Image (cartoon, rainbow, N blue to C red):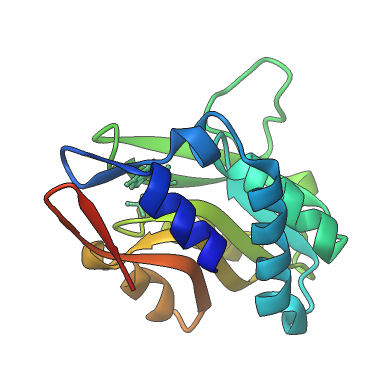
Length: 189
Ligand code: 5GP
C-alpha cells in the first residue's frame, strides 16, 4: 500500500525502544481517507475467507476494524482492556503482555459476541512481538470459533511476532513492513 508507506515515511517518528509513533494518522488523530483505503485493502486480501466477524483490541484497533467491517459487511467486536460496571460477567478472556507498558493485562469479550460457527478476522494497528495477536487468537479459539486471518497495518518484522501467527497456520497480511530503523530513518520493505 503505497499511500500508507508514504505516510509512514513522511509523518512517522521513531521513539526510543524501537517504537514508531504514528499518532498523527492512526493512534490519536485518524486520517479517515487513509483508513478507508486500509479497510478496502484488508477486504481485498481476506475476502475469500468467508469472514463472519472482525475482532480487535481497544483502543487503537477500533477505528481500523470498524472501517474495515463496512467492506466485509460483518459485525466488529473489540476486546475490552478495562472493566466497567455495564460489562458482562460471562466472558472469553486472554492474557497479553504489553510491550509498550511492560506489563500483563487481561482482555475480555462477552460470550454473546463469539459463536463457534464464526470465522474471525483479527485486525490491529501494529505487530511487534506478536503478544496481542496471540492473545486474540487464543481468545477466539477458546470460544470454538476459527481465527481465519490476522491483518496488521504496520508490522515491525525485526521483532518477529509473525512467527506466533504463522506457526499456528493462520494467514497473516501486513500492509506495511518495517525492516529496521536506521538513525532517524524508517526502512520499509
Ligand atoms: P505486540 O503484542 O505484537 O508486541 O505489540 C502489538 C501492540 O503493541 C499493538 O497493538 C500496539 O498497540 C503496540 N505497539 C507495538 N509496537 C508499536 C509501535 O512501534 N508503535 C505503536 N504506536 N504501537 C506499538
